[in-house]
Amino acid sequence: MSSDNDNLPDEQSPSKDLGPIMQDWPFESGTINVRRITGVDGLPKIQMRLELGVLQMEVTGRPDGQRPEGFESLLEYHEHRLVEHKQKHEGSAEGFVLTPEQSHYLREEAAMYYQRYLSLFVLGDFAAVVRDTARNLRVLDLCGEYSVQEQDRLMLEQYRPYIIMMRTRGQASILFKGNNLTGAIDSIREGLAEIKAFFEKFGQPEAYDQCEETRVLKRFAREIKRKLPVGPLERLQRRLKKAVAGEQYELAAKLRDQISELQATQAQS
Image 1: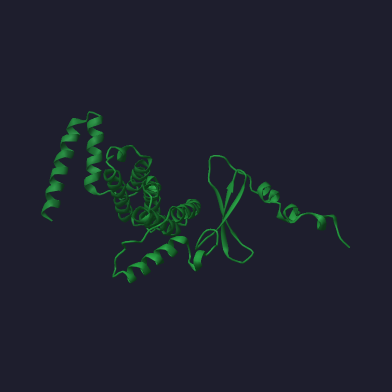
Image 2: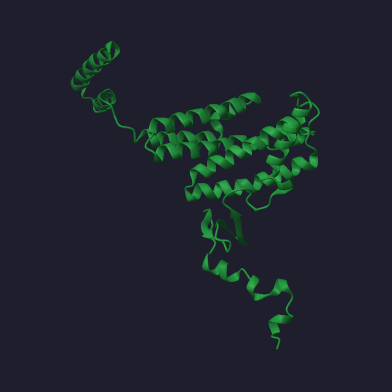
């Protein structure tokens, strides 16, 4: 005995309707809507709620679960090609190229990893953020070095400051959670230096101070610095600043003497 549903085309089957999922998880404008779920295969998945649906990604490997040419991703496949090429040519990469089509598919793949590391950052999985951002930087390096057409060599470079910023936030967040505040600040300084070098390379040093990525990292560094333990010298300097602002000049003079004495002691130790 057949039912009415048996006569429906497969794509119209109620079991494939995403409506119930979308109703249970409303889209919120102005925020990144992500969550972890367990798939029917028992493995963890990441879902991102978009305005018109839901994007689902694997937590490891290529986000769509595919293994192009038997490799984890197209990037790994082309990196393997490069290694083989060098082995055949006495360590030389001369003659190795990425065609426009290959460059295009590498960019499409990088976009998938972008969606995932953005989701992972919201979920607080900073180690995976570092993994995926470092991976996408390798895509930029590979295309920048070996793509045949100039536009393919440069197309992704505009995103380098953003990817560096996200990788740095991931690294610094790991150190911050581990209570290594000075390490987190050092990590941010290194990220800022990379971004500055990027703009200098392209002859736009003035863009460093103006770009949002620089502002985000500097703001993060300030937040971390506020949590650093305050030493005796810094406490005296803060009191001095407050005394001068309050026109307490006698107190300010005493504080200056104490600061000088402490600095002299520290210089001798």
